[in-house]
Image 1 (cartoon, one colour):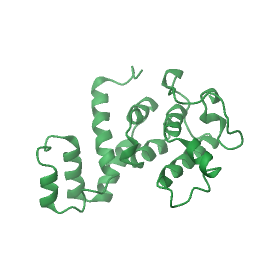
Image 2 (cartoon, one colour):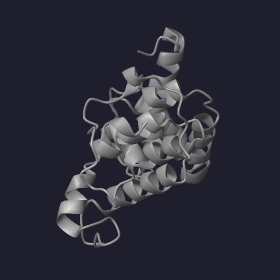
Image 3 (cartoon, one colour):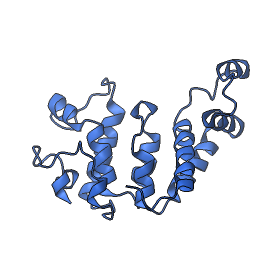
Length: 189
């Protein structure tokens, strides 16, 4: 897998992944400089330190726009898949949404994200994604799931990645007929 992504490009994407995680995080932005320095002591060579420092220097919106521009410029489905493969969903959905919104995002990448975000929980708890209450701690995840379903229904995802990119967690058969689009299952092409 990822044979079309050079080792140098993988390194660049690994750095972009860290910076994108920082772009979606506001925790360090408004922190007083002295506290930031104390929290980051010994981390000055780490990518997250460089990213947060840049974010603090130029501002949240400008930093997010820089990272968004880099993700939007990706023109290969395989690279977007690489960015989200192994993504830590505890780091929020900002990076995920930027990748999913890219026109090169492949249906296999969307399926990987979709099933890692456990849509079955929402369907079991609330019957669908429309009735997830604001009080649910994972309301933001349900919005990502709705985005994926909508883009899948409108056939907005690319279809270029081979079956080796299909995540093992993606179910093959649709037990949610009429609720979840068939294309979000492994046999849905």
